[in-house]
Amino acid sequence: MANLFAENGAAILVVDVVPERVDQVVKEIRGKPNARAEGMVVDLSLKESADKMVDYAAKTFGKVDILCNNAGIMDEVRPAADTPDDLWEKVMSVNLNAPFRASRRAIPLMLKNGGGVIINTASIAGFFGGAAGAAYTTSKHALVGLTRSIAAQYGKDGIRCNAMVLGAVNTNIGVGGAPNPKGMDHLTKAMATLPRVGDPKEIAELALFLASNRSSYVNGSCVTIDGGWTLL
Image (cartoon, rainbow, N blue to C red; front, side, top):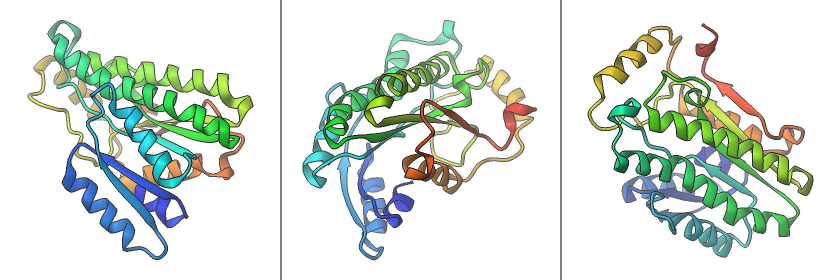
């Protein structure tokens, strides 16, 4: 997503909790003609991190036009009875609280500019119950609600907010930690009908469309991108 956005003229703030990943992507972008990128190592599970991220982007680039809430972690596919408080709170802090706080910080900046775009990375777990554990599933259901609320409240002000509802994608998110047997039983049955795993470049193309003026009439949508998995 960062590379594709940069190729289409966006100045990029690359954010990750792992410094090496930040450095790698920033280097890739800066190697492109006329591309601009800065990096920031941030742990979005920390309450103050989202504000710092948005403030740094605004200070560095002068404004914030696009916010991609793409950070996420899994929950070891743990059912509710097997989910400890610390895991629940960590998943919620990254998957839900960080997008909320980043959006809350970015919206006033976008209003001053006359508009902007927020893209949330949701999941088919935001519509179904057996594609992940209790914490992840709940966080993605809530993220769908946040997406629709922002779209409804700020659409008239020129701010569009949409969600990409992902199926299985070839990233490093994994299942996280030691998979819970009961949760994995449900997930394995669901995975048996998976047509194929998506490529991150396919997700990036959807994100670019949602960020661009080509999707000017798209607001509050949850666009499923799963290869038809949830149709089966």
